[in-house]
Length: 149
Image 1 (cartoon, helix red, strand yellow):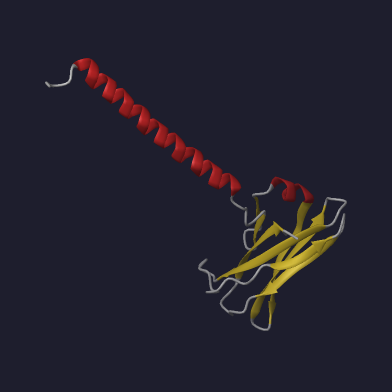
Image 2: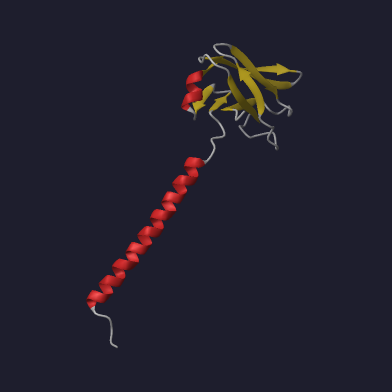
């Protein structure tokens, strides 16, 4: 048996390329399936200082309007208050969680607080708020998502 011919080498090279392409395709499709099935943890993100609202969930973003964002000083601690107004006729079960930052933008709470539950009744408004446990917490961000309940 001698060395493989040019045709045989080309055939092996083509077969190898096809196998590699199939592996990449399977990897890509698997990644897309995992990302597509992952649960979105925050539909809305509201930053207290900049008063910027980020919408990651278009449905929730269309149903809820951020009417007011404020920070109030309470006994040496900051209280973040966000007023939500419903543009939807039905009840909306939501969860929210506050994150607190110092004046330099560094997060001050080492443990994440649990998600809190709230119901926004159709075409009504509610205020959600939290007081920073850490007196260095001066700025906040709150994430809001639809509840699974």
